[in-house]
Image 1 (cartoon, rainbow, N blue to C red):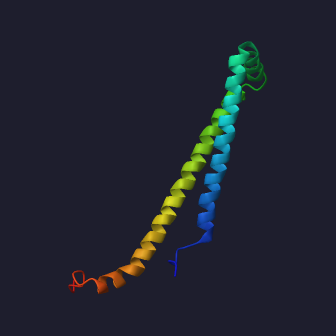
Image 2: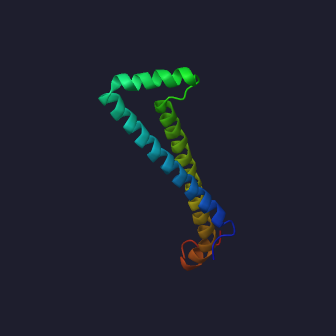
Image 3: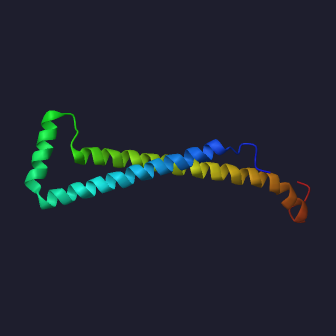
Amino acid sequence: MPPPSFSVEGWSLAFSAAIFGGIFVCGALAGLGEYRKLFFTHPREAMSLEVLLQLLFHPASTPAFVCAFALVIGLWFLAIGAFIFIVLLGDVAWGLGVQLWPKIRSHVPLLDSGV
């Protein structure tokens, strides 16, 4: 029997956050790779695009910035998903340990010293 704190919602949250982060990271790396390819093959056109987008949408909407921002967001979601997954694994392990410890203690004579 699983521990009482076991829930499917927690596991789906961990997996969905990690999958969402992985998709963002893959998309950002693909975008940065294409932008790097464009920059090395046609540097003048890439810089002209950067300047034009910077003039039109000043705060920061250049392709390199968007890809870098997506990379940071994706890594953040991957870290959150991994952290939740590790916490849930620890919770399951703790619950199993609490349930199994009395049985282990009763079968090992050195541990059943009456303390």
